[in-house]
Length: 280
Image (tube, rainbow, N blue to C red; front, side, top):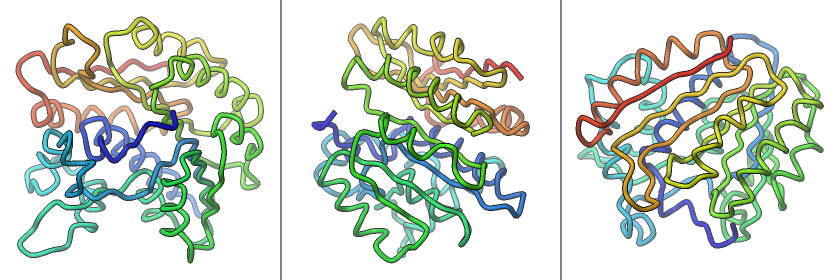
């Protein structure tokens, strides 16, 4: 896990799905005046240059956010997300040079009385988080294992909140630790909204993963997958998913409006597809 650097993958197709879903959930919670907490178990560096050596080594944003960020024909349901990304790229002529990670996405949308708790184990990324949010009183950056530290944050004092669980999955144990963490978290904060991002890859733990999540002690969940191409022969990622516990009741309809567009724009060929399963 300590070797993982999200800068290599910033703005890829997985980030597009993840952060679009996050924006939809945050905007839904803001419909009520009561404040809420946002908790991120693997926060990363917060914001990423798409021009530096890390990003250009893989150029994953070229087949992700770069395909849609400035598209005037994008569906309205994607507008809040795309407007936010554009706000970090205000140069003339328009050029995509920066991408906000999940902590920055959340902070940009949350209100003065909302609170953010960001956990990051990697020292370099944590230092960047601390620098980015050093003057933001809403934010507390925490050092340590997100799976362990999350339970101490639950339930939030406002009894309203979103938890993003987004490990690297470089360690196979993540596929076991996430369900365990969520089970304990639901015991402490059953009404929270939990967002779990996961890769679609050719490995047995990954293929069984969403089925594991569906066995958690929750009556209300939604599982969305976006496959951008057919599964490769090796272990390359061919798409990603978001498993949402206690999703907003509007989320399914919003996803159904935007996923056909994302599948067309981010997919490579006729094998690209999307799917939603839910228990609501």
